[in-house]
Structures are given as C-alpha cells and as structure tokens.
Length: 636
Ligand code: F6R
Image (cartoon, rainbow, N blue to C red):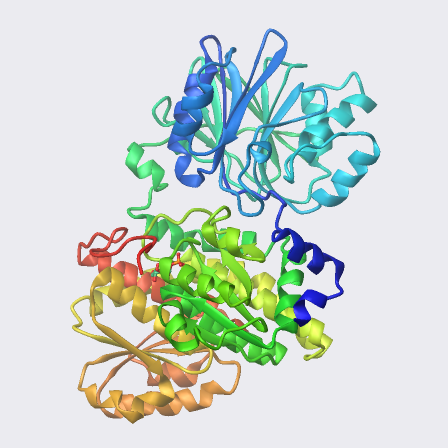
C-alpha cells in the first residue's frame, strides 16, 4: 500500500499514467542526398532500407522543391510506412532521410524525424543525444517557438530559425553553425532548408558521419552502406567538423573557427554485405567493437529515469531482478552493486524459475526489475505478468522501446545500445551493467550509504569505462586471437571468478558455449573445491577473472594455486601491473589499472567476448546465428 502513498509528485504521476519515459532520444541512421537532377526521394528511400539495421521503429524523408519543404514520416518499418505514404513520391533533387531506433519515448509519428522549425522551412535529421536539450527547449519556448515532439532533436531546427530571426542576412551554414555551437552531446546532423535549396549542411560530434561523392551527386550518411551502390568514394568526417554538400562537391570546415579542411575521398572496396557489417566479418565482432560508443550512449542523460527507478527501489520491501541468459548475468552483477553500494539486498532470479519459486509469495510490496534486451522474452514477460497480477511494482530495463516490457512497466529505462544483430548478446550486456551501476550509485546517494568521495571516484571511473574498454579492444585483441589459436581445440573450459565476477565467469562460459559450441563450466571460484575441481587434469584450461581492487584478489590467488597444482592451464584476465597473478598464469590478458571491483565486470568481460568470438570464428562456425538459438526467445 505504501507505494500508492508516495509523496514524490513525479512518482504519483508515474503511477497514474503508467508511463513516464517520454523523451525521444534516438540511435538511428541518417542520410542526405543532393543531385544535379532527378528525384532524390526514391534514392533516399532505397538508402534508408540499407540503414534499416540501425533502427526500424519509424522513418521519414524531407525534400525541397520550388522553394517548398515537404515531409513524409510515420512510425513503423520502412516497407510498412512506404505502403501507406509512398516515400518515393516527394518532389525535388535534394532531401534528407532518417530511420529511427527510439531509446526513450514511444516510437510515434510525432517523434519520427525529420523535425522542422515553426515555419516548416528547415528540416533536420539527427543521430545521437543532445544532452542540454531541455534547457534549450525551454529558452526557445520562452521565445514563442512551438514544439510538437518529445525529441531532443527538435531544438535544432528551432535554433536555426532563431538564428535567422536574429540575423536575417545569414546563410544556412552560418545559422547552422550558430545552432550547433549551442549543442552539448553527440550528433550527426543533416539539414535542408527552403531558404537555401541548393545545399545540405551536416555536422558531426561523436556520432558517425560519412560523405559519398559522385560526379553529379553527393550523399551524407551514418555509414557508407547507405550509398555504396551509388559510389565507392567516401570521405570520413571527424568530430567538430561540418560539411556543405552541393551536387558532386563537398566542403569541410571546422565548426569552431570556420577554417577549411582539405580531405580527399578514399576508395572503398567493400561489398554491400561487408558494408552492412562495416567491414567486420560478423555482426558480433562489430558489436564487440561498438562497446566504447554504446557505453558512452548509455552513460548519457539518464538522470531523470535513474532517479525515478531508484526511488521505487528505495521504497520496495523486496526487490527481484528477473531476466534470462545474459540479461540474468547482468542482474546477478547488479545484485552485488546494489548490495555493496546502496546496502540494498536484491534477489536475482532466472525468469523461467520465477513463477515456480516466487509466484505465490510475490505481492503488492514486491518490486520486480525485469531486464530484457528485446523486451519480448516470454519467460521474462511470464514472470512480469504473474507479479503484475499480484499487484507488484514492475520496473523495466530494456534496449527496445515500444516492446511489451516497456508497455507493462510502471517505469522503464532504455539502455541505448542500438540494435544488436548477432544472436549472442555483447554490447547490450555491458550497457545493462552500466545502467545497473548508475542505478546503484543513485540509490546509494539517496540512502546516504557511501561517502561523497567514494561516490565521486566511482562516478568518475564509470565515466572513464568507455575509454578503458576501447583500450582493451585496441591493445588486447591480438593477444586474445593468439589464445584462441592455442585453445581452439580444447574440449572443455572452466571459468572462475569471485564476488561480482562470478557473473562475469558465467557470461564468459555462456558466450563460449553458445557460439563456439565448447562445453564450459563456471562457478564462484570458492566453490570449485567443493566438487568441480575433480575434473581438472593436466592441460585443462581454466579462465580466472582477477580484478586487483577489493577483497577477492587474495583468495583468488589461492584458487589459482589449487588449480595449478593439479596441472590446469591458467588463463587469467588481470590488471596491467598484476605481477603476482602474471607469474602464476600460463597466459594472461591485461586490462588497464585502477578499475574498482564493483565496476570490473564491464571491462573484464570484453576479453571473454573476444575469446569466444575468435574460437568460434577459427572453428568456422556461424557466429551470428548459432544453431538452435534465436535472438529473442518468445516461447516459454
Ligand atoms: C546470450 C543471449 C541470451 C539472452 C536471453 C534473454 O548471448 O543473448 O541468453 O540474453 O535470451 O534475452 P533478452 O535480454 O532479450 O530478454
């Protein structure tokens, strides 16, 4: 009953509406096309299809012709929207398009891009997250701008309009630069305007942008997959640069000082299939490599939702963390985070077991945090429905806004990882872990459980994790490949970790089993002597996850010795300066120094993902679609 009486106004609103998460952050594909002649819309439509893997919950195109801007957009997949609105039927040889993957907010027509200014003259498509959009929006509303969507993007056309209002003689480029300089966050933006119908202007900060050049046409896109059938000449755009596109030409300038940048096109010799995977042989490897970027996105601008979720958790009498597979491992790690940082006991439960185990006892005072990348996993939804019928509070963490989980959750948080195509979860796992860490930190602050210094240090370390992960991928992948060669024919693997890295060990095992078909076992390292150690014989590969921080390091050394004494081959994941464990290991992979134990699953799982990937790939297996598995398991 207590929850109904919660006095925090936002929580009451949440309770009444059943929804809170209305903001429209996106991770998506953008495209722009300017041609000497011919119709741009069909070209944009076809290119959006090639970008659909970046997002597919809504789509839109804007073109300019005869001094008039026309926009067509709607929610739904491109083919479905096309059937209704005919995306090819827009006039003009200049236009921009967008395919959206909503990470917050409903995937509705009103939130679909392109977004326009009050006069319907300027249209913008955007991939990224504008962090200061709320301040900008309220300033613009005070200046009588009318907003129609819940997106962060919509501030951009209004900022351009405002710049024109103040400086009527400005060019589109000048007004765009003025707008972009006010933005904080990540963006790849493309803009067209009826005021200047002979160019597209685009800009980049921390979201991908690439230009394609032909003799009589120029394109901008989130990646070159979009224009590869038209041209293989591509120019990569860097952060802080803007580009002015005219048919067959491009001009790059630095946003800060307007100085020109000379960069010649590169010839790309990828096949379309390679291009979709951005040159990677498999989606899984691409997604492993995307983790610095996805983690950056996950760490952005979640404050309000984290606050709401943590308030619910704070007031709960009992908290269950419910999920399947990899998402369950995120819950297991999350339970250590909540306990260590916020002194909140939580119960991670396999969703498929939840109804049997807790179906009778769950009640109005229980809170369920359901974690599901797809938001559609039948077992997870089964646990959620059972709890909902018994009046428990349902909270969600998912990568798929608009999924069933988001519809049944009282509050949900979007993990902002973008679509994951490989069946094996990689980038969505580390994003889930980082949301759990953010939640635990919020909750800790709320409950006053840790010192401010400790909180500040952890928050700083969390912010640095994208770089840490980047460094691991850059410096350790070769080593992991060598390891994969050495152990590719191993018949069985053992994964051991202690504390929070029990979850990392379980995840390392799952990755290896599901894509490389190598039987593997995982235990909390302390458990191995209670039975599993009898398996060990000379040469048996045992992977240890060994963060240096925290109390587990010392005891892990003991566990390594136990295994070593029985002839196991020790493969350790260690911090750079961990000479003690290095000396005990047959092989090791290093991660940067100074990672707090409570955050360590995020960097420490990266070598395990790479190990599973490279073993599977050396074995010539179908890495992205392992046998017997589906990306989303919608049967119980
Ligand atoms: C493993 C994997 C699966 C999923 C599980 C839950 O790599 O992807 O174990 O984690 O099927 O899926 P979601 O998170 O969509 O509920």
